[in-house]
Image (cartoon, rainbow, N blue to C red; front, side, top):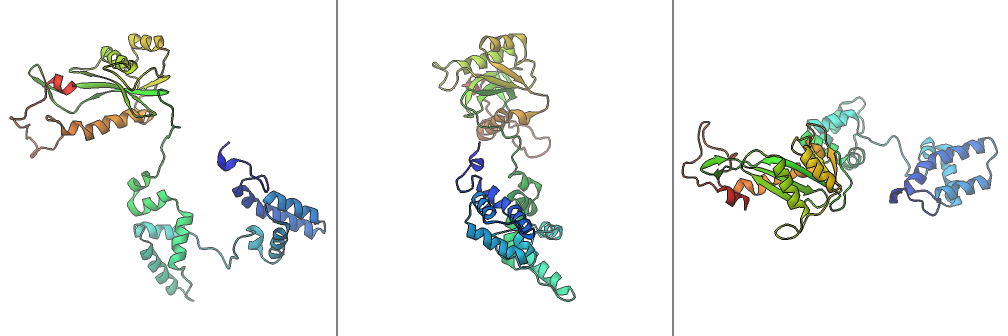
Length: 322
């Protein structure tokens, strides 16, 4: 049970639940009063359940007798007329003015003045309060900056934070860097395992050619061992996520996982978001490390058909691996 749902003293319910039950409780007491069956015991039970005093409940009943709004929202501030809310019209104005609340307020004032008879426009403070109350932070960001800004407030397929070595993720990635392999410029492949709880790289293997089951086993060995030159991260995971790669699902590799008592979670094809930890690692290493190395293959070149500088010295495969 979460803290927000935990039982509390003074009514035995969370504060949000007690507030939501005020209206139904007061309307039920009004029904009993209309039938001349209301007693002090009824008020006492309602006050205990709602976490307020009996005097407060009697005051709510007195206000509800003459005000339907007070019966629907007992204990709230007196509502003179309908509370200003964000209507589709106001939402459209916010999108038109890209979240500029002051510009939307000026538009509302002009529209209210054009009506016959002139209407009362909300104040700027009221408009700000309604926007904060009726729109989520993601909606406000989207109205001001578009869909990309709204996505920054979205939680997409979030998982609970695991503990160390509970779940690993693994992947092959071709480094966007040209290195010298026996006199030939080639882009090496990196195979690595990463821990989802700590984002640590537990094991890695670098190959000059296409990856294979041997590179997976080499990376797995460096991930499991923690003695020098490996570690300090590593050990035995409970589960490893793979994305249907034939190298990771080969009989040799799956036999090694079975021997280590590791569960292999084979993810559906074309679902990189389900192994976001290692996918994020692929992008982060390129942006923060590989892009600064000589021979980086994705840097912009002047002209469409421009080639690499002839005097650019590439790293050897051994230096790149080191």
